[in-house]
Image (tube, rainbow, N blue to C red; front, side, top):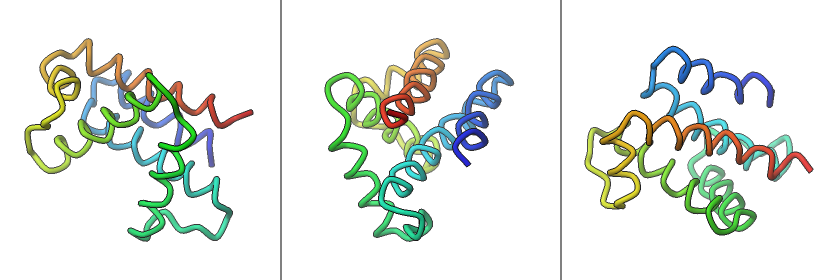
Length: 115
């Protein structure tokens, strides 16, 4: 699983499909958080997703934690058609370069869990 779900956001980004890239990057991280809890931890259950998010937040620090939070806010803004309140998320939605940088940083978060 990890290879496929990790490569899809990068492929979407390469194609300029930014909406799909942010959604897939966030979902891949949530799936990773669920996997950290065991194979029977279903990422489609709201409660499990919340726990997975908490696990990710607790294991990330500094800029990595900020990247995850910004990714979540940008993903929510894209998925719900809303304006994010967080300034860094607003910046990502105003600049293609900032958006792409966010996705690339988010994909780098997987390395924190591979060890």
